[in-house]
Image (cartoon, rainbow, N blue to C red; front, side, top):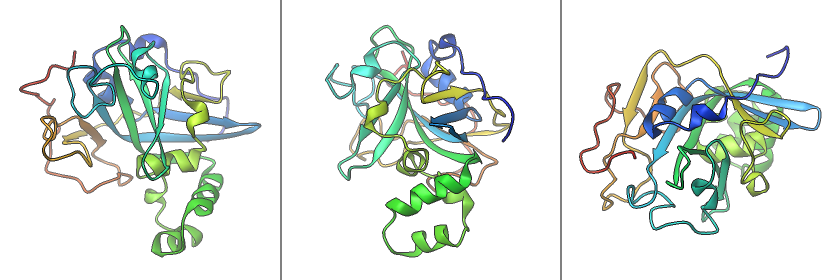
Length: 232
């Protein structure tokens, strides 16, 4: 990808209904600037999280804490958290107004800087089949297929928590790209089956991309209809 850096999405893009933002993030670009190097990926998979008192699977469900404070701030900011395994995941705050809503960026396709992304993944990968495939330059669709893989490849860590993703002068932002022509809505990945939110179809995937973090389920391209939890 050559030419000028893509312009960031406006704040108003994120100050909307949660599931609409999740749907329209598919195809958008994640732009990461590291010194004079730029890395660009196109989003292929995201998950929506419904906020305080709404979504039992959201970090914000029980209210604002130091960990999830960005979710309660202005829309369009990066919420970066680390898992129990020490891996980072990148979210964007949505809606604003103290609702605690966010969209998790789960997977993408590399557009610019793929060699550097692959090097970063190799540096963090233990010996095994995945590392061997990366070293041989194969399985490109797996490079950013997963929230931790996306962060590793783009060099996103907790230091970027709170970054304004609408500011092109910063190290990380989101921009318009090629929208997904077909969207699959499925249940979210890795949730507790006992959770009331387990079956909600709040994971949106680009149906024409192979760069997804988990196997596809049956076609769920219609807008999800949560029976017990409004998105706002």
